[in-house]
Image: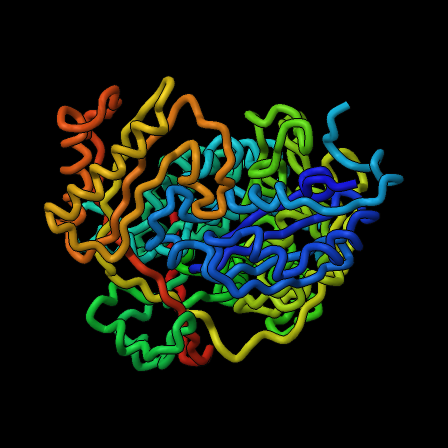
Length: 116
Length: 451
């Protein structure tokens, strides 16, 4: 089944200069391999197309079933220079919740926040 | 040596709430209470303000409220305080803290001020290359406002060893504020990276306060936390091996669970195997987390690698101005009126020769936050705000944004809603650049005061 990432993982963004890091953390480690296989740096950058300039690096943190994306050129030149209302990019981590990925049907009952 | 050291967070930034700090002081049974109050541009902004406003003391403008709130309980329990509220005037902050100590009748209490991070006058000699651009630091000379090195935990440890009950610093790396008490109490050497790694990692988990206890976290239906209006700041119960249990005062809202800890572990981290601090290079990839009770997460296995030979320096530069304002539409057709308003503004900015490095006219409610990536097939919102921002070299140019938005009141589109501009619509940009300096060239100094 095809689901939005928000049912599979939780996310948080942090800022450093003109770079935003966005962590994508599996709610259940069972989903981690699917995240790892389907959400690479290229898919990430495509999802943020027009908003993140790139490049994007991806770090894998297997111990906590998490991916850490480091998105360069994401904050309009840096927190103090950015003309974006959300100049820290605090809400950027929400955008990836809409990324769609393929999850085996038999894992459906482990998805979080699915409508009953 | 203590078996367990109890360290609480008192703030995660300048504007943070005071009550959770007071709660930690009164009910956290803390050995140490640590305050983090600085953002990237805090020092530069303080320098600019100090030049213009001789009455500005140069330290945390909330220092009085914070100290008034926590000192009675800290004095009662013997809780020591480590805080970076000194900004550009740690000595002044220490004197002010002494004032409050005397107000509360505490005499003979030692307060240390850690100086030495400010290196504005010699940064161009100490550092050659701007990290972000690879260009020479000398190119920043005409606009440089301030430069500060990120100090580590060592000078704080020295102050604690010399009997300071309260240590107030200028720029220190955030995790170092929490690591210093561990080094002091457990006798960890400054080169003992096997202990400093986990200690600094715990500091990283604590430095953003409520972000590990349910703040910047809850999302209805997905990640709910109880009473999100009543969050506590975290407490770390640290063991001599550098492992810790993260928790919070009982009876408060929020949550300390595996999810809040994982999110904070990666917050503002790039390579999780090499999180560089002045004291040690932290490796989070070996961490192990365990929920050992309600709102209790045990963190162990964080690794450490030897510290780097350099310290990071932040350089703040005056880079011009941002002018911004917004106005509103609602009801059927809000978006079409907003689109015409945007067109009118673009033409007006041409007519008044707006000289901007960048101009942005967004529709708040549609694409102002996530920008170009926002889906184009969204339903039309009932309400929309037109938000205008321009980055300019001069204040005069930035003022044109507000002037032209004012014109939209009677010379704009039908049904335009607009605020009367009582607020300041132009702000200065202090751009921040980084560089590295050899650590032996930075010499912290400590001054002691007594109540």
